[in-house]
Amino acid sequence: MPEPPPEAGGGNALVRLLIFVQFTLTEYLRSGRIWIEVGASAACFVVFLRPLGGGSIQADQFFLIMGLFMLGLAVYTMSSMLALGDRPQGYVVLAHQPERVSYLLGLFLSAILILTTVYTTLSLLTALTGGLGGTDVRGWLLGSLPLLLNVALLCALLVLLSPLVLTTFWRLFVLSLIALAFSSSFFGSARIDSFDPLVQNILRSVQTILSWPLVPAFSGFALAISREYSGAAVVIPIAQLALLVALLSLALYTFGRREVLLSSVG
Image (tube, rainbow, N blue to C red; front, top):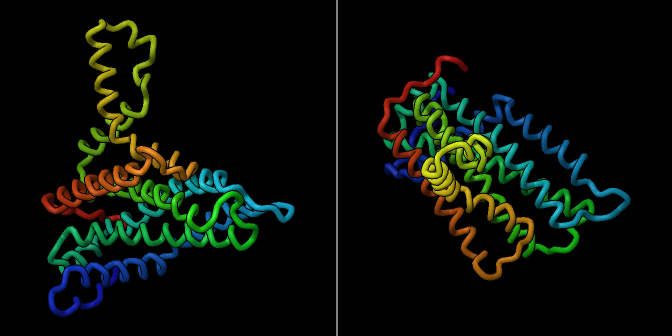
């Protein structure tokens, strides 16, 4: 990264953060990485969202496609943004940032802004070319909220798992916990059944405990498709937001306490 712009007067942390986000977005655009988002978005629209025969795409189909597409794009965008920050030039930026967490938070917010822009643009193109059948602006907002919160959750997890935050050992440890939580047959059903009943109970209990943090994400995906906020569904976005705050807080706290060693590649 080139040298960042001068700090805003008055020592305002929020203003410095916004300036850094603007600076990061400019550098991201200048690096040419944004063309991957542009190309992927164009392909998604042409292949999946463009109406055929003058018809409109159904809302549930739209949110299903966009939910999967945005998660895939989030992996690229957040990883690219972290790679942009994980360079020796980043020491110059860190030297101008009294609050070290602003550096990591700025990278996260920059990625979220890009992804939100992509999602909004694809939504507008879909609405202008054929519309969303079975929903209106209110329905689009209700479906977009949990969808974008899931995107933010994935980005926060990628931030936590980045070399900037965790060492190799802890990254592998967290990934192993995620793998265990995702699969109810991590060791294979036959292998588990061969264990003692006590070991079986322990393994299933561990999997149940580890799967709880995944509930808001999976529930949010289903809520984006159904857009039914009746009953207990109203707490799903709150649970997503709480998990997002927890992941970001853990990442920012860890980053603020460890010695920063940026990659020499890039």
